[in-house]
Image 1 (cartoon, rainbow, N blue to C red):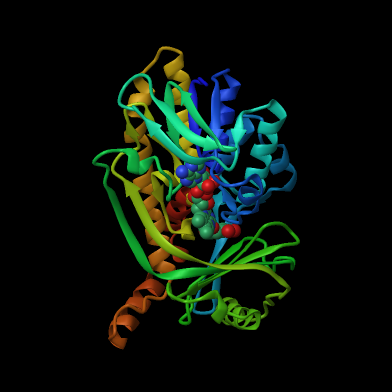
Image 2 (image 1 turned 135 degrees about the horizontal axis):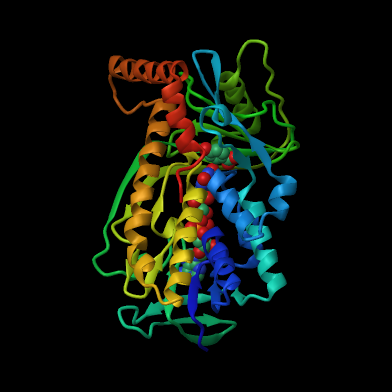
Length: 390
Ligand code: FAS
Ligand code: PHB
């Protein structure tokens, strides 16, 4: 078959790009290795930047978001038993919206079904070919049938473990890992807070987020090699109560419906392009979730890439030629913010020397005291958390 753009991966990046192309009549196909049920069941991010909300609105894809999203004016930073509100709306005139990635993927896919998009699930052995030339193609196996899809462009929105990044010769990745992980739970109990709480505690980082006014999403810092089997529900709640507790405040507990441990690492590819192949989202970069930037970075890439492809089909090659450089420049600013939030809020146990660990912890308390005491520092956090311009 022939199409104009072959999109590999039906995560938020691939699904959103398909909608951008559809609006201007650019043909595409989306090839996904997992089943429809699998991608609809993935529980991941929970916060949309203002820019992400704006692009969904611009594309007419925000009806569910408008109904179920929760607008938050800021976050709380907590340390040494004190909880401080950072008011984004007051500081930078922007807000964030709590809206689970699972709900976003479900809505984007339902809209593809409604417009009759060609989205294929359980596709195996997807491979891009001849992307250096002007007639690339993709091969794959679907329902036992070998596919060849001739196209103008191949988009690798196939995530960190995808096939597209490795298809770029000589590509390098700058990366780092963190000596801790996040244990996340979903609990069917109304949130005990209005805005998200990020807490530094001597026992470790903890966070109170949410998915709705009925469902709470909470996280605990754990060691990267820990097993979820070592964390029965009562131990999870005991640590959440310890790390999030403040005088006069109650953390309401409930049944835990999902729990998992996610490692924390960062990586950025040296390029997001090779000939007619372009990478977007986790295929090109990942960040630790502390700054709520993973999903939003994928959306930012796709907003830029989508506009660049539309310009290219309109005869202007400029935006597409600068896509990789522009997207990576924005991503490095996101990386430094995510690293800053992560290192400020997690307990660092790497050093065997207790005095070194104590010194590190006190400098983090100093960072938090400066940030919560300075309107300028708060504005810098607000500007980055609510989202840099696309
Ligand atoms: P995705 O990984 O979502 O999608 C890629 C798609 O490509 C997948 O569906 C995959 O099956 C498919 N694919 C891969 N290889 C393929 C192949 N060879 N052929 C066909 N299809 C292929 N971000 C936050 O902001 N906050 C969070 O709290 C947060 N928590 C996370 C927890 C976990 C466990 C993980 C893994 C990520 C988390 N993230 C979080 C980051 C996450 O939200 C990503 O940034 C987001 O999913 C990126 O979207 P995509 O780039 O579309 O990649
Ligand atoms: C979430 O709700 O899953 C969430 C929110 C903010 C973060 C990370 C995760 O920084």
